[in-house]
Image 1: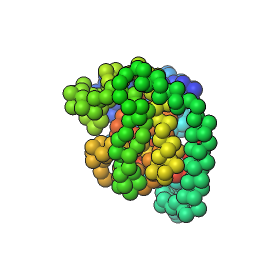
Image 2: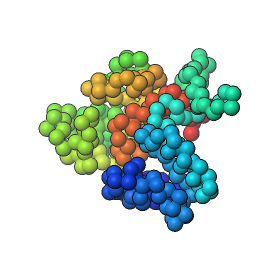
Image 3: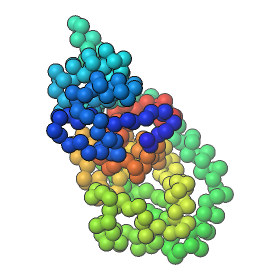
Length: 291
């Protein structure tokens, strides 16, 4: 539903057990239970089915696959472990048994040099071409609300190295002091997520809509603290809430943009954002950065 350009229409879901919950899930209606699989596929003209629950037993999975084969329906299996996803996964055959092979991450010296060369080249050209625009934006910020033009904040960088990120100010001067006051209204406990943040100024809304507030981070890229593409740079208090495999996101420099920004920003949950950062790091390629 988030990407109509895919041409995919989500029809509904089947519940795991006949008497289990049958209400709508993420807006999708319940079409019956797993026992109704063949009938639902035929009646609804289903083209593809996704088995997304790790709770489906192996024997039921085998049955569903056979039924789907009879009905001419393609089956997609959603892995329950995030690190088997992405282009680093290969299909291996061992004595007739199909297994998923996950290659280790190897970011060679030449790969890092190419990534750095891309960062320096693009950020330098961008700063030069936008030199005329920044003074005009600075003037608009000053006329709209009192306070400095730039917003500075310490963020967590590669391998736990802290650095100071620069952005064009989009909020009132006392925005940081009002965080705890607004936290009860946040849509997520890990960070302050509001549909309508009262701290955002009029010019700030326009800057955020166009992502122009991120432009000063090109300077962070030139300094080698950030990259054009990479995991989201987290404030220090938010970074403390990420542990386990999620810490792998710090293996690469944080980026101005990345999978989270491209795929949906605030429509993507905090947990899914960490998974996307993990997938980016563990499946990195120069071509993915260029894309």
